[in-house]
Image 1 (cartoon, rainbow, N blue to C red):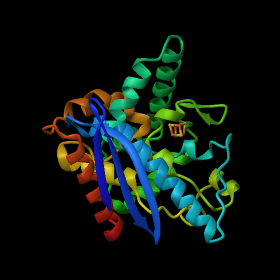
Image 2: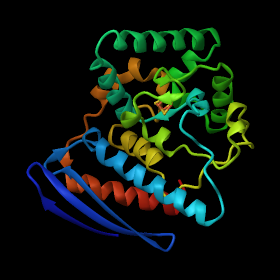
Image 3: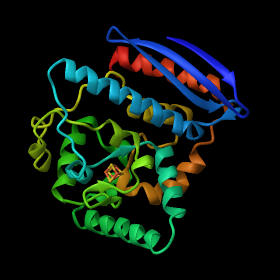
Image 4: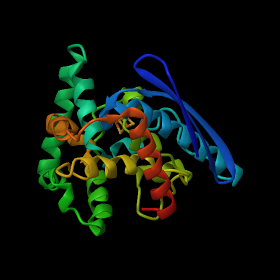
Length: 259
Ligand code: SF4
């Protein structure tokens, strides 16, 4: 990978060239020039995710796979979506800035979802994700899906906060038949093979820099955890380009180690 940065007043226009699966990918994006925390890098992380997802979809096509996801299909928006704490913080801001009556409508949907999770005995469990063992993740996800709780941002089977949607939502595309998404099992869903996984790298980096942060936050609990998430993103700021280099380093490590 090669990187280069040019000053553009508060932001640096950073460029990077990577060779992935034998193909070159060129990235060009503005990043903060001065001290920054992970949450300030969210626009950059979204850009990275979108580029890597596009690249992965192209790759899948060359292998004869085709993506089943289409506009207006929101089956996956009834799943348990793990997001990073800084994304929970950002979703809190997004809802806070919504005009009325939309804000109240969204808040009411979040509350109703929590009421249903409480009735299903899942709410307290989701509030403590660090206690959910790796072998419990799939059963918990299936139990969640069985509740049929739509994401509060899902409207007419489309994402109403498309530009702000979390990285995990951006990365979730399948090549298995679309109808399987309505009745998912561990074996019936085949995701697009991602060349690089930004969402899980961000979750890991978020915890590394802020050890008291939960390793993931259920999207459905994002609002109740938004304030705590902001308080927890208090690692000393680093120069933006340094943070970007660290992110690329971690992506390369996790990709190589598949961790
Ligand atoms: S944020 Fe948008 S894409 Fe993600 S689960 Fe909710 S509605 Fe779906």
